[in-house]
Length: 286
Image (cartoon, rainbow, N blue to C red; front, side, top):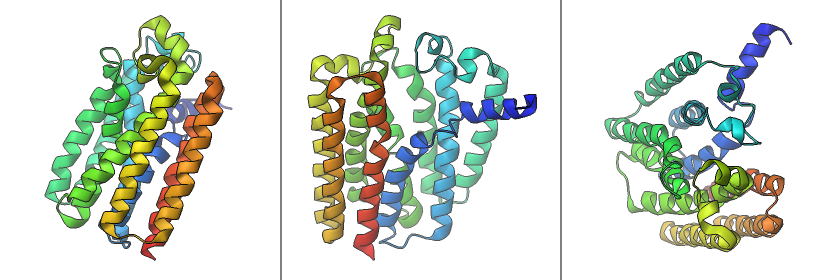
């Protein structure tokens, strides 16, 4: 690999573009919201804006996260080789890329209505402040739940220029799902996080971690079930939801060893849950 190719690869790694799990977990609930808000037929242009925006904002969020953690990532086995922690990318270069991504994201949101533009400022604030919370509270997973759910009210506002109660129910369901899967993620880093003083729900929950993860999964699926009732969705939605619940149960069962790699793989496999639920929503509207 040439030096220029190596440089490009480091930028790709900084934005986590080589690891799609981050933007997939952000994309699935956004697609849920777009299809529900659009009654099964959301405008193609708005879908394209949101899909692109999800990838761009996730990349920008990774830069902020790595900047915040640049002095700590080197002490964590899974993150010690990240570009900022290893010095492969300078802070100045990282912020330059962040500004470019921010301008691109703002250009995308300007294509939408005024309410959605206003909501985008909240999204930006939450994304920019999330990485710093784990220094002060054991609940950064809840804040991440807001960050990864804010595309839901934005999707409803972009299509209908309002935010109905169903949007907030969907947001609550996704927030609980996020807490569940991000606690699994935090379990893979728990030994290192305890050493360097990073806080998380994985540390807070302690030996009750899997029980509470199961609880948050359960609340999420219950809220999705009630949402399906409110929207009068057909059996395909409930079939998808049932399969997703079985996948979640399997992931919790597989994580009972609490080994790093097992918990991390369980986190990654949560993308199947989001995709299966979206398939159920898609089929319910056909």
